[in-house]
Length: 369
Image (cartoon, rainbow, N blue to C red; front, side, top):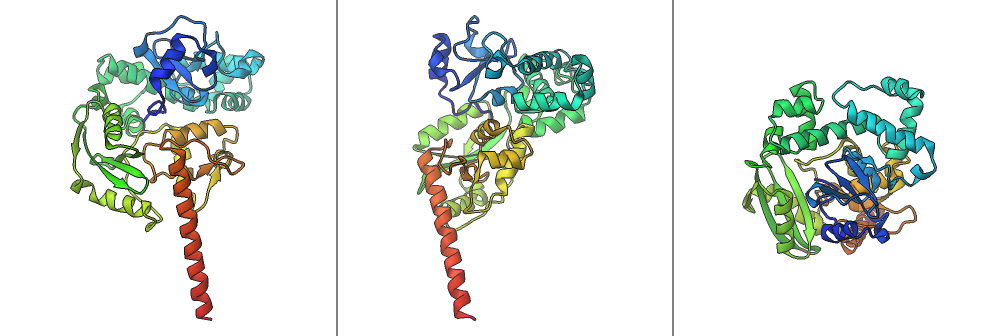
């Protein structure tokens, strides 16, 4: 699932058309035909709408394989930081040589910089390593070739995958389906889905034969149905509540405060960075929270705080991956894909449940000295 799913795209597109500087920093747009991402106010010629993707942060755009625009410099540091300008050149080099084997040593020799120093600079500015950026570029190129109707074999080699096993290994986590199915726009993929009322609004649960592909909270069933259809436009979606019983029951129990853990199989897309963030979220204990900075530290990328927030926003399975347990460093709540009021209610319920359990344990211990 991409980070663009929940963005108000019509409003953002109007901001791009009018070059509205009020939206600078609110979102960034990327152009598939040029491979760059820009500020809404960028002075470049307006792209065709079908070539545009929207992203909440520069890091999420980079994770999708786009490089920063030289004209509007969406990485603020590029205006005065020569290292940031060098990173732009490294991005261009990686794109132009993505079909080749590119090592840190290759990049260091090309740009006259110690390999480890280059890695630190690149990661600080882009929010991901040169290797992760190369992976993202290759995946973007693979998708482009498949969308054009190229054969899987041709797309594989044009994108720089030197073996089919390597391609299918990446596709399992990043496409969410085989390359052949992706080429068909997801046709042939069967998804069972259902929507039920809960104390926090309506809950949508959807799964393939491999596991959950979407868990969402919303105000109306119609809204949730529309979002699922937009996300999987060519899949065969069937209303199958009975088939989803093994998923639905623990989720409803969790929302009712009667279950604290959710160990359910998943069938979701993720970049390498998102996988690391989501794994860090899964180990946050019930009833506890972590800051975005603490998650960034946990995945050994302390500078990637905004990228962590973006990965949380891209989480396609509410509750199962508990992104609601991530808050600001000052303890206040920040944005939540399914609404701040739901985030507050979930955290309050978890805290109260934990306090009740601890209180019961203390009473039992006191009565059995």
